[in-house]
Image 1 (cartoon, rainbow, N blue to C red):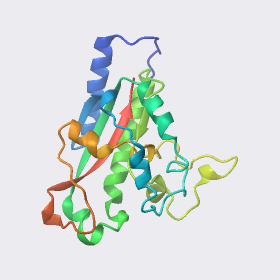
Image 2 (image 1 turned 135 degrees about the vertical axis):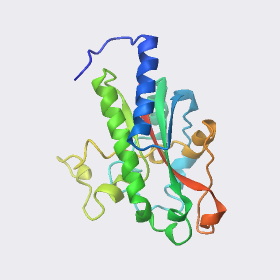
Image 3 (image 1 turned 120 degrees about the vertical axis):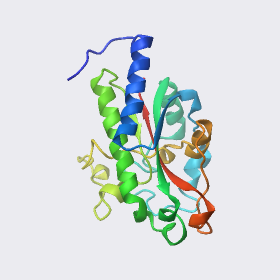
Image 4 (image 1 turned 180 degrees about the vertical axis):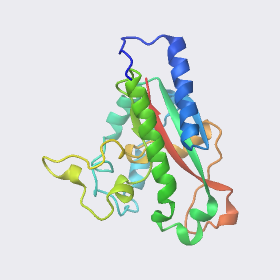
Length: 213
């Protein structure tokens, strides 16, 4: 059921809705979720540079990854149009992301898909509550998780995304410094690379964000 769109949402209703979305994220499977103000969102050109140096295998293969995703300048302007968002975290056992798995992105597909589900459902709930401009962002290349063996249809003239209600740009693909954002809300986060073994870190993260209002 849809709620009528109004020009300015009363503060008490907004706070109630944000808490509802935060709790819904946990109910859907997030380890934790927090309501954040958008001044806590860090947008940095260096994040986008990481997509190219060293170049990610998914670079340019889909509509939601660089260089096809929004310019960093436009992302900053977009974020500044919002005041609040829901920042979601799924903690992942370190053994799934380290050692032999660090170069095998597919090893964490289930947790990634869970975050895509959380983000898309929170975005939809907000939309039907009258926050018609709500936007969600997930993690990693959507092509890996939804169309790994098919050409991205959204890059074909006259066609759109096969999964328009599920696939989203990643925060990092938009230039958001997810690591620094995690530290701002008190989540312990560690760099994971080829030298890291399971016993070196307590867990990994799969993070998502929904800009609400």
